[in-house]
Length: 264
Picture 1 (tube, rainbow, N blue to C red):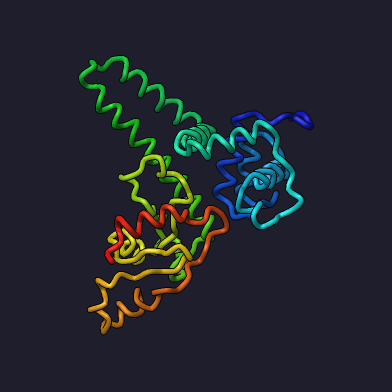
Picture 2: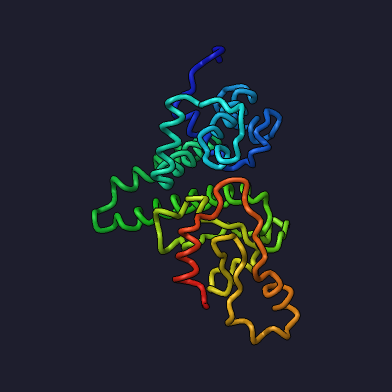
C-alpha cells in the first residue's frame, strides 16, 4: 500500500458503514472492528480510525455538541454522507453487499453467479420466485445493518429500562417496517428495546413524547395491582429514556407513533 493513497468510494462506503456501527468514543485504531476493516481494505488501522473521526465532522449530533478538532473528510466522503441521508436503503445496502463480498468473496461470487444463471434459464412467468429471493437478501442485509447501528447507538441497552443483555434486546422501528419502506434503515427511526418493551411499543401500549419521556397507555391501568405490570411497565411512565450517542429518535416519527399506533 502506498503512503497517502487516496480513499476510493468503496473504501469510504465501508468506513461509513462502520461509522454507524461503532459508538463515537470507540473510533480507536486498537478497536478489533477497526482493525478488521483495515485488513479488508489494505489500510492501516490508524488510517481507518482517522476516517471514522472525520465522518463525525459531518454528523449533526457532534456539530450540536460542539465537538472540536474534527477534520472535514473531503469532497467524496461528504457526497457519500449526503447520499445516505437522502436514500438510506440504497447506500446502506450497497455497503452491506460490498462488506459481504469482501468477507466471503468466494461464497458471494458463487451465489451471485448461480442467481444469474438461474435467471437466464427461467421463463418470464417464473421470474417472481427469483425476485422474491433477491428481496429476502436485501431484507437480511438491511436488518443486519439496522440492528448493528441501533445497538451501537444505544450502547446495547434498552432505552426504557436499561436492560443490558444483548440477547434480550431488539432494534425496534418507531414507524413499523411494513408501513414506511423509506425509513426501514434510518437509525433515527429506531429504538433499542428489551423484548417486553418492544412488544408493548409495537402493540401501542407504550410510546415516547417529544421530551423523550415514556408514555404508558391507560389501557393497562386496570392491571395496576399486578406486580409484573407495575414493575415492568407502569413504573417507567413519564421517566426519560436513555438517549443514544447519535441519531436521537426523530420527533416527527415519535409524533406519528403516538397518533397512529399508541392506545390512548
